[in-house]
Image 1 (cartoon, rainbow, N blue to C red):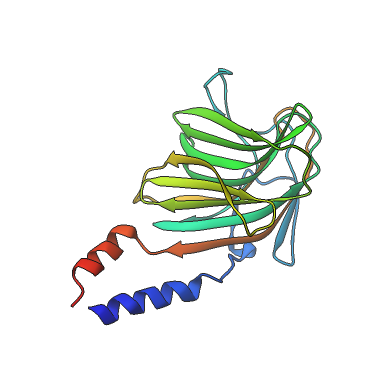
Image 2: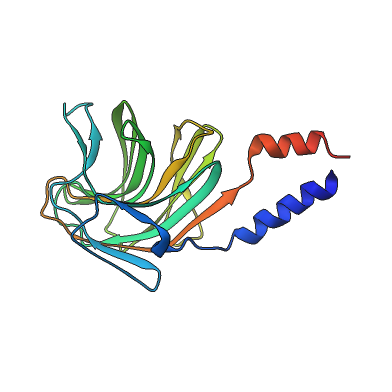
Length: 216
């Protein structure tokens, strides 16, 4: 049993450096203009598009570009994001989505002339949390870690030191669409670029605990 346990760990470790192939992903609300080059995605974000449900504003929208793959179980995902943000609420980052009533979107968002690190958590209705940056940044790394029934969201300006933005509930033991999201709710669209997108499988916490307890 010990051999099985360490074999599992070795297989998982071998996958950690593997990047997700953008060419194997698919669109939800495909924008009119987009391109994949050198494993980076560039899109012109669809004008007047967003993800939001009911709370505060009283409307529901589910029509912004989302380029995704589907993962079960536990994983870590991160991406480097940059954009030519112009109008209020222009945004780009990651989204983890079960369905139209259950999703987390997180990234950078342009609000009132300032760059904000933004997370929207939706379960039936949406909420919104922001961290305002002191100055504009050319890019930001966004990372999300799904463990059991929780998702931890982090940001970094150098892909070395990561700071937590949010912890949110997301139902476990169910497949999740995970990928690249951008929206321009008030604007006429903008160019957004996503680089170094990676999804890393993480071994199931409950499974690892079982293996430890039952190792021979």
